[in-house]
Image 1: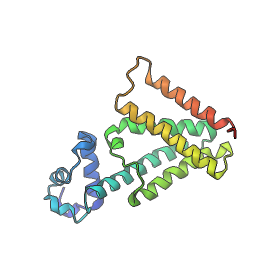
Image 2: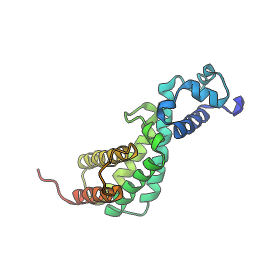
Image 3: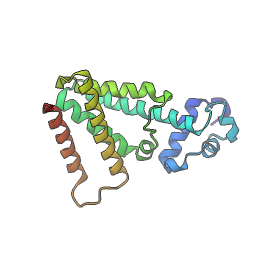
Length: 186
């Protein structure tokens, strides 16, 4: 990459390709600089430090995830939308396991917009269940915990029992959808 073409966006792209190929542990400013064909100090014109680079990468990952999920749920509602959301989220995590593992889970200023977009898509998918605002937020948290937790365990090969993982995920989707359709008891 020519130096003139280097920008924060380009640095993030280089970092994501590095992580895709070698895993999150390979991410260092020196490794990114080497791939960019510049000295490490040259990166500081585009990112303040490794923490900011990780946050910018997370924003890009969340944008990609939100875009895919948004397309998947478009025109669907209720159970069909939740199924599409959960399936698409898992597919992304499995397809980009290293990238997904590099995702910073704690909110950062750089990830706020992308995170809000993903939450808005989730809230829209839940709208058909007639939840009030607070109840919908709880459902978003549960949905995220279920999908993210499963995806992390799957991408880390943590499911060692002999039954098919796809069948387990179908059961998880069924449990989530059934739970969303079942009124909570006080």
